[in-house]
Image (cartoon, helix red, strand yellow):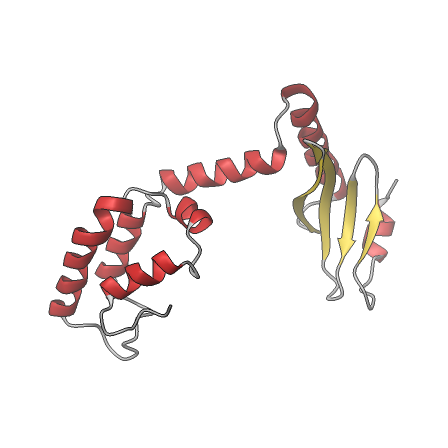
Length: 176
């Protein structure tokens, strides 16, 4: 088992390495010197890893408590702690109005930051055209979809996304 002195003495090496504690808990020491708590476990016959935090933000005793809680979820409730964390994150995004429509409206109100127009704010006519295109083509189909879910199932490289983008920005050509 690890003790606090071992954790404090863990220095960066040429390659990342692990210092094992017990019951799947280990400290990953990166080449940059970061010390990261990880919990290795098996769920549904697959080996998985759960990030528990960074030392010194998460002390050894706290990392052990988090490991024990994750083990309890697996053993008593049959819940994958990694999937539970993902579901909680998606719920937080939904609770924070994380739908595509809400985010797109915020983007329009903010003046389309990150758009091709590097200097200044787009004209009100341009913003009106974008809003009309969003309302006509995007919101009816996917406006109520959570952004986290959308990104999971529709990666940016997807051809459908490029077609959607071309309908919003007709000056950009669709690449096949």
